[in-house]
Length: 530
Picture 1 (cartoon, rainbow, N blue to C red):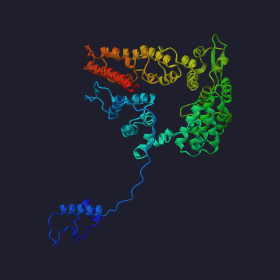
Picture 2 (cartoon, one colour):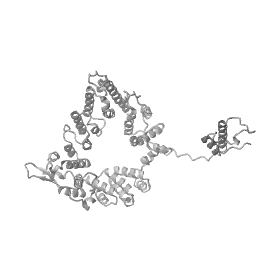
Picture 3 (cartoon, one colour):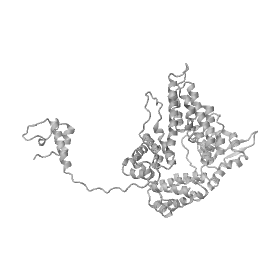
Picture 4 (cartoon, one colour):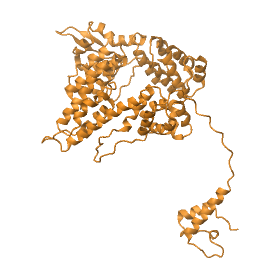
């Protein structure tokens, strides 16, 4: 019986080449004369060795079968919606037209988030056959994960245990689907004391949404033993349902050994206008900002702090400014930002927010003071001050990032009207960031303003690529009922002599895609309607 060469020798010969490392004599047939050339003999020997190794394996003991998938009591999606989900997960977007053109077909990848959101609104259960593709999509796109994991439910988490590539689901929603009822005190206590960090975060958020006081007591029970980074995450959950009842605990947290925990506690306290910290900040800010009536008109006078004492630092004022920022302006901004906005009326002559914002500010402190008021209005969700600081939409845009934050404090319908008027005054090029904070679907005046501005850009002969971001937002955010009104814009317009060559065709495709996307969104919603 011929001996079998070691597998390592065969691998070495294959890697180095049979000319540099010929196969051993045991690869040759009896008699010494090779019947085949060396490479073929090497492959034959490898095949024989592979068969022998496999034939010699002993069967391993059978592994224990996994526990069955948990029951999901939610109703299944309708059949038409199930087929639509399969299409969206398969990423069957319209074919590219080349040259950067997207064509007229809808981009299905951009519609998947809306489909998942609508399915979750109706409380549907994900089809079992779609779970692998759904988890793959959520792995590739972090923006999909919250909606995808909610839709996947307990069976999705069960399945994620069997594929290392789906571990994100266990980290991001570990045990979320199996959380105990918030009013089951014994089960809540057990999971809080023994659960993984992600489970405890989800549990605290669920209890906080159900009964804020119970969540606070749960957090108090283990607060001294928690790690600093965990205390920060747990403290952040108190934003939900924040009230004056949280003040004693937050005041204690101002003495925490972690600077980040202290800063977060101070921020939360400053959002409580009747808290002791808010009062201390208001007193400090009042000593810095006053009304000067010595001239013909009233002027706001500012005297920034000359030091950042220990009391200010305990209340969350950071002593060291960022590069390029003066210390005194840095301290002043933090004091004004943390002061309740309601305190300024009494300090500045009983004026309304609009009247206060209109007052001149001495010694070039206007930008610093107004910026701090803007941050305070956003933090305190004060619509009156946000409205005053925004000003009329027709005024020249200052900081769009600042305006978008102020808009978020206004009611949704007022926000849409303000942005619509802004677009009418300034066009779309300045409005993209503002559109992102408007409720979806866009209200009628806002949708009409966006479409009118796109129509104006088309008539001007511009290429649509400059407006691709707005067009993409319109596909996702316009009310699907607008599709019929947009049909007239899908025709190829006559091109003026000074227009960009071929721009009319590109605009026609862009509007065709917009109309077809809106109609597809309407169909998707119909398919998901019970």
